Length: 176
Image (cartoon, rainbow, N blue to C red; front, side, top):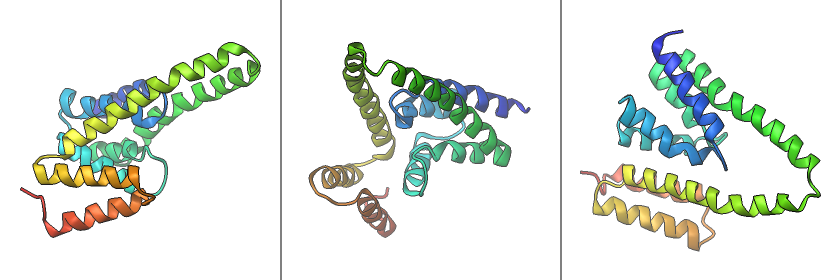
């Protein structure tokens, strides 16, 4: 295994066991590893890759194989996917078994209630990080804010909002 494949395996295996509350909760650490620690891409490249992964059909963690592909081709896809999804799948299967076994215990409800704010905080941190990396001027900040409001206050489908943002981007409005 090459050094970069070994590094990708270690990083994504660690992220896999830390993905508490969903895959998006590990985005800040994923970006930190890719951008700040290893300098494999810029924050803007990571943000663009995340946006593309979210627009693509499939699981919301499509960014993982995309990173693998960008850094090491097909072996990178295989290594990052196995490292990211393997350990968390095993842990989830084990935890679900225990969760079902103790389904009548009163402490189970308290654990669930306590985990909600943790998950919300982690997802909010991920959103802040992606926004910070994507918004480079006032025009883009306004577009991002309008998009967030459209998703929060209307019944607009997120893909429609994303398509509208892409259409605005194609005009060059808000660029440099």
